[in-house]
Length: 142
Image 1: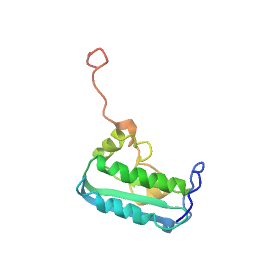
Image 2: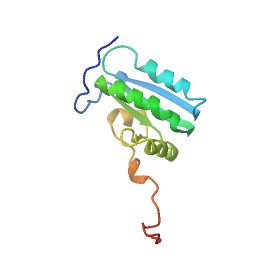
Image 3: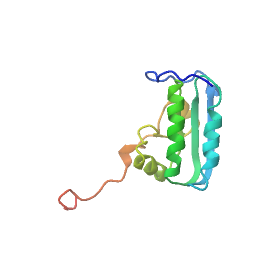
């Protein structure tokens, strides 16, 4: 088993795109279907050393909170190994699940694996586009 040092300061971009590991999921991800994603994320983190992991969810048609735990575990492991996890998707639904689980800041959307590798999030995605109320605290419409 590999020893996990304390997480470092900011993590670097791998020098070669080939240093990244990729996990892809498709279809619906819920409590009854998330196991293959969990196993793929665990498998991508085998071995010692840094892990730069791109999780491609562009073909996911539905996701619920069952994706939060495996993504959090992958994040914790990769960060402890001086790497990172980045999520590729264009789904407002996935953003809402991440926002509700408190993980949207960790996992901003990337539009492609290449953008994830470079660390260039999708413009306009993230907590800044979460739905907001049209009413003020006193009930007045804005």
